[in-house]
Image 1: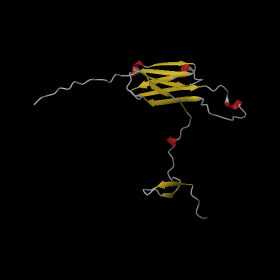
Image 2 (image 1 turned 90 degrees about the vertical axis):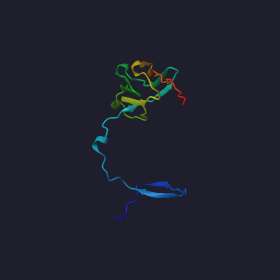
Image 3 (image 1 turned 180 degrees about the horizontal axis):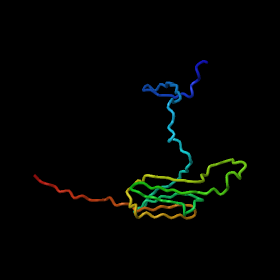
Image 4 (image 1 turned 60 degrees about the vertical axis):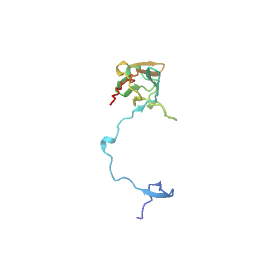
Length: 150
């Protein structure tokens, strides 16, 4: 057999702005078995904002059962987990033209942009929208400076 065609090519720009083609070849490293995820998990979309005194995280999650939503705040991380039961059993559908909604287990962990008082976090789920409010930690400490004259 002759030489096989490359799977794909990459264009690399060098210092003189000239393009060079490099042939990529398949990796000879087998992926480890633990890299494989045997279930799908949806990821939530979130809006993160702040008021003068608190951080506010808003996440639409229509169809989620409020008894199956968990919110954790630990240090600078916020984790939201839950489950959405599909309204129609998949095997009832003979054809599915679009599949953009995620049904099943979902989660999202975000790094909070400011220091917060995690133990004072409050969450409200209404009309399919979760709103998490976490008071900000005050970090405006003033340090007195002592001037020593020589």
